[in-house]
Amino acid sequence: MQTPNFAPVPELYVSYDSAQKLKVEAGELVSHDLTPRQICDLELLMNGGFSPLKGFLGQADYDGVVENMRLADGTLWPMPITLDVSEAFAEGIEEGQDIALRDQEGVILATMTVTDKWTPNKSLEAEKVFGADDDAHPSVNYLHNQAGKIYLGGPVTGIQQPVHYDFRARRNTPNELRAYFRKMGWRRVVAFQTRNPLHRAHQELTFRAAKDTQANLLIHPVVGMTKPGDVDHFTRVRCYEAVLDKYPAATTHMSLLPLAMRMAGPREAVWHGLIRKNFGVTHFIVGRDHAGPGKNSAGDDFYGPYDAQELFKEHADEMGIEMVPFKHMVYVQERAQYEPADEIEEGVTVLNISGTELRRRLQEGLEIPDWFSFPEVVKELRKTRPPRSKQGFTVFFTGFSGSGKSTIANALMVKLMEMGGRPVTLLDGDIVRKNLSSELGFSKEHRDLNIRRIGYVASEITKNGGIAICAPIAPYGTTRRAVREEIEAMGAFCEVHVATPIEECEARDRKGLYKLAREGKIKEFTGISDPYDEPKNPEVRLDTTNTDVDHCAHQVLLKLESMGLIAG
Ligand code: PPS
Image (spheres, rainbow, N blue to C red):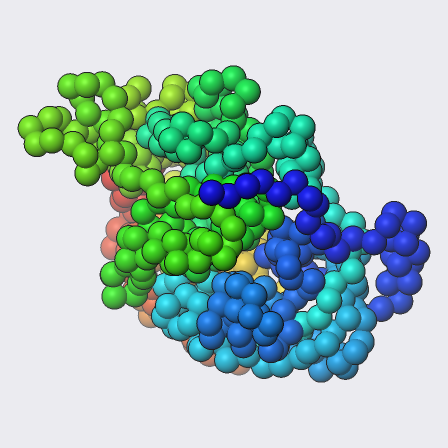
């Protein structure tokens, strides 16, 4: 049986006075601007959450962790905590050099003495740590497409914690939580890790886990970085606060963990256990498919459903934390209660709502029954995820100059304004170039920048529940795809290809530009002397050659209706 360890874990911070001095000295050092993920890692390095690590991994430790989950001295540690930087930055860094680590506003959080600099074998890291070199895994995708090419390692000296303005009272360092447990006399504490809102099934299983282990319960949700597409942590914390009232008073505590998850399944479960041990916890709940990344590019699961439980069990003694396996809980209608799915006899009515089904019901504003969740939780989720007909969206027109984009976009705007309900903004190519992009020309680089700006503004409008109608040429497929991804994170995206042929556009030549382009007086003119990538799968394709504007705008409206974005 695990016994609580109330002794403090070592932190990497220097004293307040030394920190003030170091901060001034560090101002002279070469500095690295930390990425959001690195800030999460640094916070847990500095406050002892990643103890026994003393800094970002050096090469020998990294090799050991990747190969067999152990640091060079044999200590169990399953996750490479690395400081990735660009080749350009690494070029100027010598081994033995001190560097300053700054947050995204430029505040110096720590210094690091660089002991190691190397080019990692990322494919090997992907295979060993995440189980496959497959970009469908969010952390493999991050490794290959976002992380810098070079790793720097070395001990960290902590100056100050990253600043958080949200839910301050709910954030605790490992030593603060240990002190809290001691003060409360909690000798056995079972922790529940989560990145999702809690519904009745979770409340039931955590309550049972605490009862069965005769322990107090720590709800320990991740608020650093979770899986792309998850419910944002602001909403989740409001949901957790509502659920806290459902536990017997003074048995349960909630604290927020600024961890950047890697979705590494089995290895992640062991990592989570080691972190919780540092936070003074004695028992840890591991469920089916713990920290699962979803499907791989062949459509299969990356890990088996119980791989995480098995790996955890294998190492539990060495970790000094006991695993509490939890079962898949379902609602038995006849008995009006949750029960483990594998303990239910045949013939009873079992009810369950999957995550996908829940999202669908939220999206379409459908009922979410009381047996599934708490009304307070559903209310919070509905606030964040209103039905599609109340969410923001973007209609993105693309096509040649003179194809009819602006005319249809204007007609669409008026029709949407006539319907009312949401603010509508038109970001027409010409208007944007007069305001937002007045200094830009028509080189590939400038066009990309122009479309990125339009995409950014449209994503903000979409996020805030408005309708953005964009009508630039947007000739490059990759840029359009990037804009789509940015906007789809906030709401719906409807691409409209105005496919009027170039001959027709040139024949119309409404602005006289085609003539000038043919004469070589305008360079890099789309369709004449510059490329246009045809959209492969636009939501709508229109040709204005023999069709009037009103009909074209109506086609778009019908599409928006079928996407559930406007009421029929
Ligand atoms: S882009 O490629 O999306 O950034 O272009 P956009 O911002 O939509 O601007 C297109 C309008 O600028 C005029 N114009 C040109 N178009 C294409 N190529 C060149 N070289 C060029 N020079 C000026 C043209 O009138 C476009 O207006 P629209 O509304 O498309 O007719």
